[in-house]
Length: 568
Image 1 (cartoon, rainbow, N blue to C red):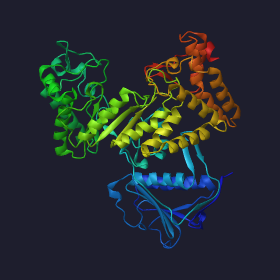
Image 2: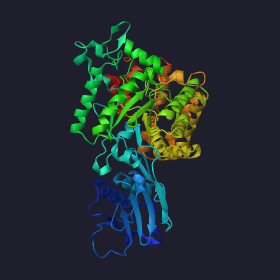
Image 3: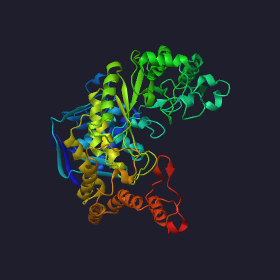
Image 4: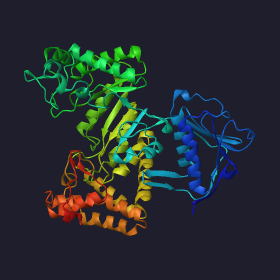
C-alpha cells in the first residue's frame, strides 16, 4: 500500500503531468528524470510519462521540466554547477541546476522536501509523508552548497546511489561518480593523500640518490614512515613537476592533484639539512619548506593547466602556517584536525581554532581532514555525536571550502557508523545547521533505521555522551578507557537495547539493532579480559561479526578467522 494517496501540484493532480527533459540532456539529467518518475511511482503508484522537449502538442500541458529544457527561462546560477532551483510557473514545475549534477540534486531535494523521502542508509529509504500531498503554486526553493568538496569516508557512504542522494560529491577509488551522476570532484595523480612516496618511491631513488630524502640525525633516512623528501633539492622539485605535467597530458581535465607529505610515526620526519633548516627558521615552521615547494609546482603547472589546483596537507609538523610564505591561488591547504572528541575548552580544540584563524588569514581554499572514528577500535562505543555539529559549524565559520570526514572506511559498522555517515552528509550540505535541526535528523534516522524502539537507542546515545561530556577522549582509546566500568552501567545499557529489540517489528529493524548492539558485547568482553584470539568467547564474537559482514576490528587489523567450532 502506498502511504501517499495523491499528489497535487498547484491544485492539479500529479497524474496529469508529464516529465520533460531536453533532447540533448546530459546523462545525469536523464537519470534525474527517471529517478523522479521512479519515486513518484513508489510514493503513489502513478507512473508518469516522460518526453523530450521537442515533442509537439504539449505547449500548455502540465509538465515537470528537468534541467535546461526549451521551456525554461535562462538562469546563470552564478556559475555554481551544484546549485538548483525548484519553482512553479503555470502550467509547469521546474527543477533546474547550474549543471547536470545540480539538476540531479534538485530532483532529490524535491523528493525529500515535498514528498517526504529519506535515505537513511543504502539499505533503508522511507517516505515519511502520507495521505494527500499539496505542492503549492508559490513553491520556490533555491539552494547552493556552502562547501565545494564534500566527502564522508565511512564504509556505508561508499554506496554511490546513496551518496549522490545525500549530495556527497567526492569521486575516487571509494566511490565512482560517473556521468549518470553528474561526475564529481576527484583527485588525480597517484592517490589523494601522502603522495611523496608515490611520486618518488624509496625503492626507486634512495640507493643512488639518498640526498633526495630527509636528513635526520646526521644521516639520510631511507625508512618509510620515518622520512620525507628534501624539499630544497632542485632535482626533487623537477622530478615531481615533470611527473605531474606528464600525468596531465593524459588526464587534462584533472582538477586537483595532491603533493603531500607521507604519514609518519615520528614528529620530526622532515628534512633537517642546512638549506631546509634555514627556511624553517625563517618561516617558524617546517611548513615553510613544504609550502615553498608546493607553490613552485603550482606556479609551473598553472601556465598550461590554469584549472588545476595543487593540494597539500597541514598535518603533524606542517600544521602551523609559515610566517611569510602564503599559498598561491591554485593551492589547497588541507588542515588535519586529529582529535574528534574534545571539550569546548580543551587546549587542543583551542589550537585547532587558532590554526584555522591563521590559515584563513593567508589562504582562500582551506579543506579539512576531520577524524570521526576510533581508529584503534572500530567496535568501541565512540560518543562523538555532540561534537560533529559544532565542529562542522566551526569549519564553516572559518570559510573552509571542503571537508573530508574520515571514519571506519574498511568495514560494515558494529557501532553507529551508518548514523554518523548520515549526519555528516547532512552537515556537509548544510554546515551552518543549528543543534535542534541536527538532533532532529538524528531522531529521524533512529526511527527510520531501528524502528519503533528507537527512543531506547537514543537513551543509550545520550547516556554514553553524558559520560564523556566535558572531557577529551582519544580516538585511539580502548572500550573501557572511553566508558570506564565505574561510570558505565552495563545492566542499564543492556535494558535499553533489549527494549529496542523487543519493539522491532521487521527483520531489517532487528538486524540493524543486532549489528549496532555488538558495541555493547564488545565492551563487556574487553572488560572481562576476553581479548585473546583463541579465547572461546572471543571466537564466538568473531563469528558473530562475520555473520554481520564486519571485516575489521580497527584500522590495522582484520577480524580473525573463527575456528570451526565458533562458526557453528
